[in-house]
Every structure is written in C-alpha cells, then in structure tokens.
Figure (tube, protein in one colour):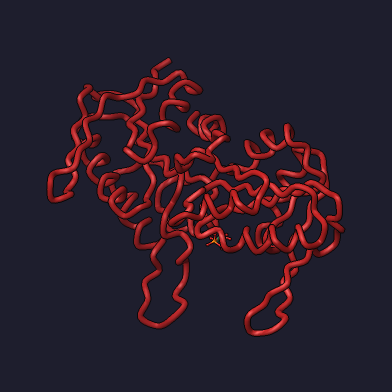
Length: 285
Ligand code: R5P
C-alpha cells in the first residue's frame, strides 16, 4: 500500500504528527519561514512525485491562509497523484450569508480559492456544514464531538448542554457516547442589559454539567452560561469545544469560572486535551 505523505502547515504541527501516527503516514520535511517584512516563504524539501499528499492547515489567523496557498502551490509543482486538504479550523465560516448589503459571503470567498489546487477537502466541525455546497470538489466535514465524548467519559458528567438549540445535535452526539442526558439553553431577555440562560428541560441542581460548542472565541457565551448554571446549583461545569480560539485572555477568564476547559487539537493551545486525529484518519481512506 502506498503511504500517504503529510505536509503540515505551521498552524497544525501537533495534529499532523498525531495524524501521521494514526495513518501510518510520513511527515514531509517542509521549510516555512517569514521574511523580515512578514511575507511567507515555504519550501518542500522531500520529493513528492507520484505521491498521495495531505496538506493540513487552518485558515485562521489570516497569515495561515497565504501559507496554505503557497504550500498547495509548492505541492502541485510535483507530479503528485492527489492532494487532500485538511482544514481543521475553517476560519471565516461564521460569515456564511450577507447580513447587510455590501458584505461578502466570506466563507464562500475562501472556498472558491482554496479548491484551486486541491482534489478533496476535509473540514472539522465547520460552523455550518451547508457551506460545503460551494465546493466543486469532494468535501467532507468530520465532527470533533466523538473525541470530546470519549474524553468526557472520564469526568462522568450528568448532563451535556448546548448553548443554543442550533448546537443541540452536538450535545446529543456527546451525550450518546457518555451515556447521559442532554439539553439546551433557553435564553430569556430580562431587560436591555440582562439575558437569563436556563436549561430548557432538565434541572441542573447538584449536577455535573458539560457545555459543548463548536467554537469558543471571546468565551462570552460559555462564561454567561456557566454563571447561570452555577446560580441554578450546578456542581461542576466543564466547557468543551472543538475549536479553542480563545481570543485575548479568554482561556484565563474561562478557567476562572469553569471547573475545566477542554478543546481539541484543531487549534493548538493549553486546553487541547482531545485529539481529532483518528476522526480525520477515517476520512483519508
Ligand atoms: C456561534 O455561532 C458559535 O457557535 C459560538 O457559540 C460562538 O462563536 C462563541 O463565541 P464567544 O466565545 O465569543 O461567545
């Protein structure tokens, strides 16, 4: 069987190493650096002729997008068999429609350009899977929730909660793995300044609760949710997400109110205790 060759962008070194182990693939020797003016330089040091290549790189923050384009172009300079791009965290996916006249559909703008050199795309918990319709090449979205569910088994939560009904399926996926119940938050506006978040159906008093979401950015959503859960008597609250962006000092703020903060390795950070490598590996076959 021909071994896969994995090219890691600078956003995804840990995940690439883990994926190479899972897939029994070789990591390609790549030189990536920045010129003094911050422009990017990449060079593939191994021969990729006749190889099946996998490129792993996030499209966040912005400089990783340029790096992605350069790496894809460099890979295509070889006579490769196939290029699969894994985009663990697909930045710009939340702007998936025009909210105001004159705006772009940002995720579509990236999709159009990303597919130019690529034969197949794998994303992980992209904000809304429906955007994959804009790819003209085969695309698949994998979920980080099974890996989060496996990890949570150790913490034995009583209930998994989605911050809103849009994330309810994620909470159900995790709850099915853990073997517990699930629910979502019902938001009630008290006045201009205050929103009350209560679990829709299940009482959380004296319960260990895990909140699951695709992204934690500023942490605002989870911090408000956690404070409300604690007010309602929850014992421990675990904050879990696939993509830990942790803007500014969000991780520290979260750690001050939550009993544990857990993210996957789609973005490497001190909370990435869970790996999505095996979920991605299943889709490489
Ligand atoms: C929103 O649609 C996402 O699913 C997350 O709930 C959101 O990005 C979280 O953002 P923040 O951490 O800034 O509240």
